[in-house]
Image (cartoon, rainbow over all chains, first blue to last red; front, side, top):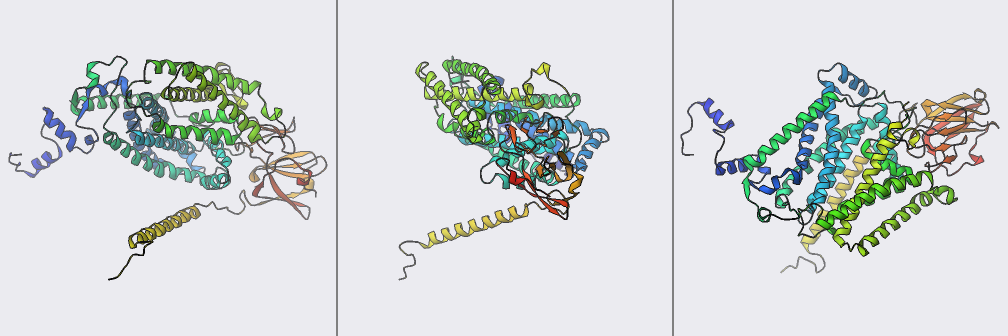
Length: 462
Length: 162
């Protein structure tokens, strides 16, 4: 500060744009974090225990990296895409064959988008498992869930844009679900589709959602999400079953270099992995959309296969609206009912919690396929309850029976295993999540033509 | 000295209320404009208009003809009656193909099955295939595709005779 400014303008420009030397003392490093636009998202010092890979797995950071990749590749894809029928499909063909690196950029966009769904879900699982959404972090959990919905929305709207058979029918099936929302369903469906069925208007609507509205929402929410982490006092501190002394009051180290170096290596490694994957595995593209010919089977995008599996077993109002609605409601209220502060940071709460979670996973892996098989081959509610409204016989009656089953399960773990309120929430969250995963896997790998059940290695090809 | 505030509503509260009311009104207006702006429009001659199919005698009794630009099947029943069945599955919107050998409509997506009248034979479809209104003018068939007609079961009154 006391130094005299350089005399030549060129030297002054250089001094303004580039720091003179990388700070080598803690004081200088702290200043650098505080003074930087990007780095000041971080605190200037972080507890050393939160830097462990095996605590956060870097999932939130990876989601941010993927979002950046998606925005970057998405913007340049705009230069080779027309949102009209049939030009959209022709543009994708052109992109694949005649545009320099077109195929690779589309692949990066496609695979990052799919990976982002997985990463966002895992991030929520990590936060749940360590109880990191508990007070005062409830609001950031809600924002996270909202962002997951936006990410799924971005994926779904993007799914239509290539205008191939895969896109057309996945979106037809996916948007038909809207019709079952009571009262407003049909009007809402017409508004979203821009007409009675998926067509040129739908493509334009989805395009505007995909390239403007949803990304804007995501960027705003993500910025708020980062800011809230610091407002809520940074990351939760990890705890293990046998807490070491360093965990009680961990040493705080400077963000530069300890955190930033890890983030940099992590980002470079993942970007490299996505690039390599995108060079090797092309994004799927089928023939141009044909509204007169539904492929067999016509499957929804893979992240909706759990929902589609529910649709095979329930009346659509129950399978597509009531059950997912309740699940979403559960996600939103979790941090307001699961509030015990003292074991935050410990994976699955305690030693007992870990055993209970394992039990929940085991039961989920066992009971879900058993129920799918039972419903597929034995239960036939519409035939057993003739004359009943299918909403009752094929919807609310089986739903009530499942609710009864869950109630008995709850009685069992609280009476015979003496589960506390906190442990019951843990048990059911793990159980229901496992059930959802199993349904998704059944939908992806075990459903073939006519949505019949097949072994994956026995799947008929057509 | 003037008493400006009434005992029930102070000036501050009145202004707050007025701001809230007019602000809410403005938001409603903006929402209404957005909804109206986004309303779908239909072009003439596309799906959604009245489709002329020509003389009834072109469709022999006991035949099922896929009219793709109208998105429906023209069913001529054995007794000569006519039905226009929307080809969209009432479950989740897939296009239901007609199987000539069995005389049934079987959806490839979730295996809903409909008989020749469009009645559900196998769920998950919650209701029969929707109908389009048929009118006969000077021996010519006209099908109005603007509004699918939902029905809970097949009824002979739905059949149109030339």
